[in-house]
Length: 131
Ligand code: HEM
Image (cartoon, rainbow, N blue to C red):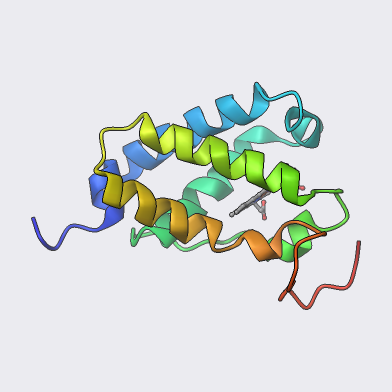
């Protein structure tokens, strides 16, 4: 159907929930990234990510979490961490039966937030001076 959103093509709420589940399995299996999540309540984080992805892909949820710059600054997240994070996202998307075009669109909609995350990124447009 022409009117389907990316959210629909990922498989709606069940599909997004599965996607986030396998994405965080990958992140937690990465020794360079897992320490960032060691003390984090993962159930809540994944719930927030389901909202975030659902909203970004045109689905029916609003993101009710904190602003991304605020959440990430002060954690020592570098561009290298961010690159690994987005590489795991791409690998997760490639494990789902989606067209290359959809994979690229989904990836772009999430990776567009990158400037808000890493503290050594150029052009931090976050307005958050902390960290
Ligand atoms: C484009 C990249 C990223 C996006 C879109 C993103 C998105 C999010 C979202 C939506 C939350 C939930 C916020 C909330 O609970 O209010 C979150 C939390 C978190 N993110 Fe990210 N994130 C990204 C990159 C990263 C990277 C690279 C790391 C570390 C290597 C990271 C570590 C964390 C941690 C530790 C939390 C939990 C914070 C807490 O609950 O106190 N994120 N992220």
